[in-house]
Image (cartoon, rainbow over all chains, first blue to last red):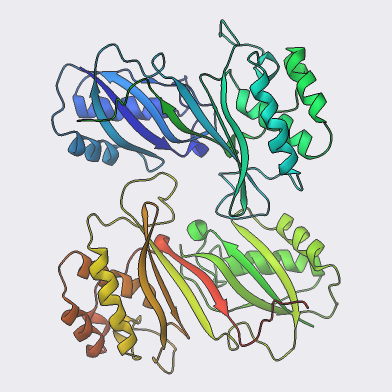
Length: 249
Length: 249
């Protein structure tokens, strides 16, 4: 039986999603707690990895187990009671065996949060950069739609075979005291959103023009782009699939 | 010169507002950092104390100093750079000497946040109680307007001379996944909001009726009320004054 699970986590105290030796990962906590519930060792596959300090408002993952889980609501309750307070499981849905949390995903959506003033409730969940021209950053962000090769925004050591991404959404909007960048694409390269944001911040500071931004993408060279924006402002907010796998009816 | 300062703090890691021996308080951090800026010892007087773990989205306090602070925006920036990340100063305003952060305040407004499901981003900023009838809790909360003596919701050891409070607002509303109780009064007794919420939660669970709630208030005895709701769900959100002391014009 294959199950899809939706979850959220506060990434502040995790070394990212993926299990690594001598570090505290979301995957490790998820597999440990699920192992207790199912009384067997289980591997959990996520839609994507998040780096150290990156948050997820909604992550999707799958796992296989022999038993059928009948009362999924109760299972979710018990799972949450075994998880630390910075991870919460929202739902559990049995899906067909050919659905894969990573390979079946049609798109991923991220948000990057920038707060304009010091706010004690947002310090772990946003970055601050001083005065920025967000209208200009929003205008320049639209240029992302003109390209599909984002090598310039990709970490140098990556195992990705192709660097082509189709950008579906890219805009800045103000929510209360926070400016939020929303970006959705079929796939993202390693470190890509933080490199895009870091480069847009250079635009918002007046250090780069719209033309510079395009030239950076066209250079297909990571050295051309700005520095990455801090992890704490980044949230994975959604993953979509070809059909509504979360619909029980 | 007397100055009013508005600030916010995440109360999670503080033993409340007030300076106490061997504990970490907001007042201590505020006075320490202000002392560095002004190069003199300063006392800061808040509109009210908050208990261990209680947050403030907006607190008002005052202090006196001999120097005139001309560039208040710059002063606020420098002050924030000396404060830890869980405290932020928003504004600084010179006021007349007869204004007092505590005694001149006309009202205080608190919010209590209850989350319905586990959410890693709200674990330090809300309480969870399982299923509650919030419509009923909202209806019963209106009975607070019928009374002014809230001895039943007051910590037994208090230095308050009178227990009369005029309730100005008291309602529950849903904001996203969180139910928020807003209560405004000219003044509050020690521990009052958390005792009111704890008793309303007993109503929401069906353990107390509307009549029981009124009888508890009429008993004028702390032993009659329910247990206090946890500190982490409580926020001081506003303090009002007779005239707009924050208006520079």
